[in-house]
Length: 357
Ligand code: NAD
Ligand code: ZN
Image (tube, rainbow, N blue to C red; front, top):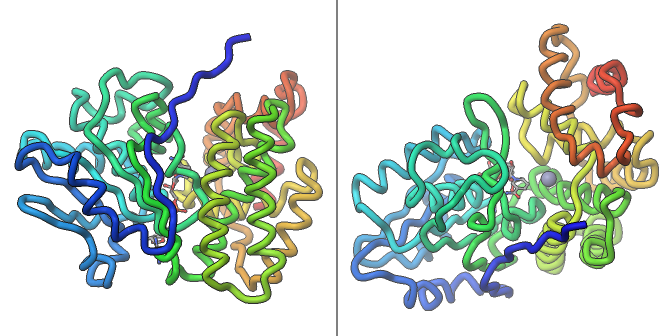
């Protein structure tokens, strides 16, 4: 057995108002007059947070469009534009949800690696460190702030640039930044974390490392989505740490059925990660009976809408495409169902599951 020796984020600052330390944190990382580039989620354009970004000299704020999940073409455009304008930059700072953070990771890597980001979708294909990169979440749940991947939709597949060069050099965890997230979005992204925990804790890859983080993250998710009568600041504090711990849990194990199935949805229909996972998890009683029961309770308690019948009018060809994408996620199925997973989940069974969504 070969154990994974995994690269973690170098520096972490946590606390309400920690964002105000960003200027001081960036200062020693500035290289001559090369700019810091802030990739800020377009939601914040014209909002007070934009005024607090510590822009100096040639620094630039680029508001990134996260209407759709990040594409390799978008990453390439951003990186090429920066290379043309500045040659090189001091660093890339991603401020936003999982999408803006993933864009920042990918653009940082593409500032130094030749070709297109699509060339690096896979495992350990990135060979050169990117430029200095910082992640600052404004939504909690994906774990993108700690992971060694950046999930991109490319010309032929949706797959991350998984590498030891992918994790951020620094993350700034300031729960205040999540304060105004809409309840539905907060829930969908928060459930990404809840589902990470259930998939990790019930998976065959589980070990004490993953379990320690997964149990804590699950407890925090329950605190905010089950026990709290109304959403308050403490919920944002807790959910931000749940996301971090949930990310650490899957870093040393793997996700499972909900993610494998929702990847198919997202590839074919463009369904976003958080809501897609909720749509799928809602129908996974057979695989995660207790988790699904609790999930349904949280949906009801928090008055959330989970879309239904989204696969109602699909063709055989479309179902087959989703099944292909989903069955391609081999480690996820193996984690969920064990080494003999192919005997348990047939194409017909998966088709029936997609028809339920
Ligand atoms: P998101 O980043 O896609 O953002 C969802 C919506 O919320 C957007 O409209 C955004 O503008 C808005 N938003 C962000 N912060 C806000 C705030 N504070 N207030 C109001 N609106 C806000 O959502 P997400 O669920 O955080 O991220 C999903 C993305 O993360 C997907 O692209 C997925 O592939 C990726 N992901 C990556 C990893 C990883 O390890 N790299 C893990 C899971 C998911
Ligand atoms: Zn996820």
